[in-house]
Image 1 (cartoon, rainbow, N blue to C red):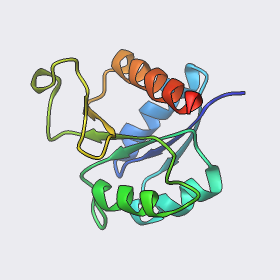
Image 2 (image 1 turned 90 degrees about the horizontal axis):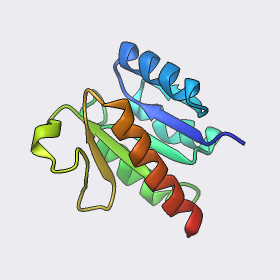
Image 3 (image 1 turned 120 degrees about the horizontal axis):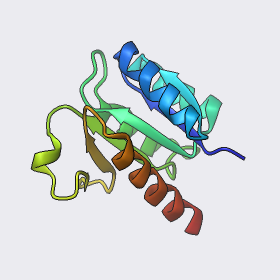
Image 4 (image 1 turned 60 degrees about the vertical axis):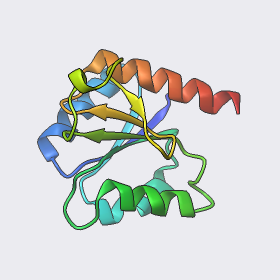
Length: 128
């Protein structure tokens, strides 16, 4: 069974491209371009991992993450934060864990790095 990825980002062009790439690699992907709808989308879809943009209008990724963490159905769902606020040259291995334990990836996202992080996050979730 394909692993389920919820991609939350307000940039429709970015989510379309990411969805195509992830589906090509065997993931089942749902896109949500409205951050206020992210929690309800996650509850309906029950993803194995959530890719969440940091900078979005209406509600930023940190606020969405707090709501996900507060929801008993979603609190254990791994979240990978995506941000254009850093670039890969600022991160030693291209990704970093933030203070809340989420992985943070720079945008634009390099697909090889994304796959490595997804594999890591999903295998850690499977072993819990």
